[in-house]
Amino acid sequence: MDVPGLSRRSPAQLPIIAVASGKGGVGKSSVAVAIGRELARTGRRAGLVDADLAGPDVPRMLGLRRDVRATSVTLAGWGGSRLEAMDVGGLKVASAGFLMAGSQGFALGSDLGDLMLGRLIRETNWGDIEALVVDLPPGISFTQQGVLSGAGRVATILVVTPAEVAHLDTGRTLSALREVRTPVLGGVENMAYFECPCCGEKTELYAPAPGERTIWASGVERLARLPFRPGAVIDAADLGPVLEAVAAHIAA
Image (cartoon, rainbow, N blue to C red):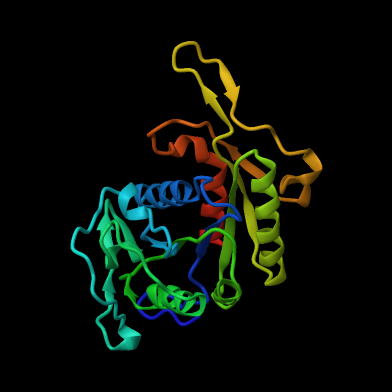
């Protein structure tokens, strides 16, 4: 994948961490933002791509918004100017949400949407970053598989809840990733339980999937099991093993 301007390093050498899930609503974007923020906090020159064109939530999570509706979207490959990544606390961020107002949506066919996704990554002026976190849309399309298979040093973090349907859908994503030989660093089980702030009692929020139907049974290592905290961001302390796996991938 030709990604001009990403780094002085060859695109084939640039570490890319794709955060993926087969199921929407599992907190995938929250995990991606937490990883990106922690990389920046620890001095890494990192970028974050919000690749979910249908639901670009990263700007809202970072306190960014656009109120003016866009009448057209033209990226550099179509004659427009390059998108400038926004610096948020040292983290370089690009999102389809920067191209439209908060309540506005893209009416794109799948082919055009996948093309725009590729251009969003390639035609953003990232500066001299050393790692890129990509928040993928739920599921995985053939074009996304192609982007990942041709991107060089890509590895994936999978995000699920304990629910069987989340494991079932993400199991399909896992199969697609393995078809294109994209390494999976491990998985995050999000919203696993609620901890009472008064007494500390833990309440499971989902009926757990049968063990043999989980992505863990398919060989994915569970790196973190996170609680549900209404309105709270994911604490980097909860992602210790995830961040260790990401750091090892970047350093490899």
